[in-house]
Length: 310
Ligand code: ASP
Image 1: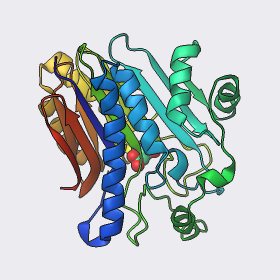
Image 2: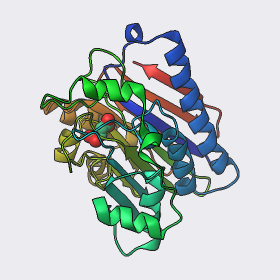
Image 3: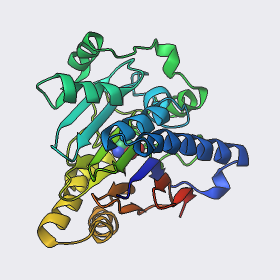
């Protein structure tokens, strides 16, 4: 049976003219590595859940992406991270929001799913839970990067927030966040999303990524989805679940359902961003309504691509 892994590393106004060849190469390599990590799980007969975790951990460990290590600074100069996972076979889900010092928030979200009675743990409670699990905690320094710091310095005295991913001047139109969706050889699908949120975001702000149905969703009957973009609008659109509903109730296929949500519903409310999706037959789609999205896909029937721009 066909198996597929798709990943993203954020979407927004990502323009070739803003990118140096070295940076472009680094992003491409980062995506390729994550794709390989996740795909090798599928190749060995592993589950879609383990594949999306493996790919997401790799992206969280890469300082270029706004998740885990590369998370943006909040208004108070901290890092508050959100993550979620969902399993299509049984609709098991786990999520965390506003967590600190956790090396891989996607692993903590997985621990919530596997080892607690809950779906979503927030802030201090999630941090305390992390210490009861085999979760690696890192000092503040681990999350420091000069370009994120400079990005925040440029904004900290204002009330602006940026959904941002970049070192560039145009910082109001770029999104971070990482995610993965997979269909394994047993026909089960899963999704994972992880983010540092928005530069200069308010203490306690939570985006769409850890909210099941908004930024992350999986159901074997329909699709597995991971979103990136302007979280507030993706929450209002209940974006990931809307794709599932269009498939379940209106009989659309994955591509058409995602197209409707990304290019019609979200556009109508200025919800800039994109999403990746798979169904239980291994079909995939990678769609966005802005200039670019860091993205990649690899399938058992030989497709392998990593792309940044439109
Ligand atoms: N959706 C994320 C959030 O609003 C940001 C992003 O995708 O870059 O937190």
